[in-house]
Amino acid sequence: MVPVTDIEALALVLGGAAVLVLAGRALSLRHREARNGALVSVDERSGSGPLLRSNQYRISGRPDELRRLPDGRLVPIEFKSRKSPRYGVPRSHRIQVAAYCLLVEEATGTAPPFGVVRYGDGGEARIPWDRATRDELLDVRAAIGRPYDGRATPSVARCTHCPWRDGCDARAV
Ligand code: SF4
Image (cartoon, rainbow, N blue to C red; front, side):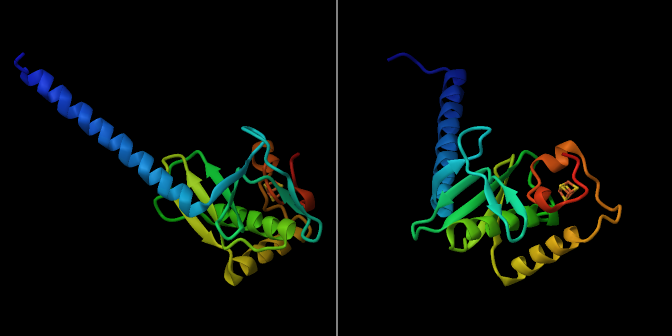
């Protein structure tokens, strides 16, 4: 039998560990995908996501992904390239996901139970689509509907994907 050197043994151990890490990652990804439902559509940058529009609230948007839960309800997913925020989901991210929940509800007639924001490092957070979130969203919507008071910071990058563009008189594009 050929003797195994220390280096070869170490390489075998490291190789085995790498396989285990990859398998663990794949498993956790599968669990997460199962929790968030089956993929229905993706944004046009990578596929063919639908543009959702609410004439009542004058908002529109295209969630990065739509997923279908086993009970048929759709869940919007928003991707952020940045790392998971250290101090919780910023309000702007929460409101954006809430806006997509409202759009999904308007488009399908069925409220999603939650929306999801997913960060570049794989972390994600669920935003429950409940009364409190809806009230917060509609407060923001009402504030944006008031005449422009100079507090907005419009920019092409910021406004291009903003769900409030339809009803915002300060938008840059
Ligand atoms: S200024 Fe731009 S980013 Fe701000 S609400 Fe209006 S469209 Fe959205």
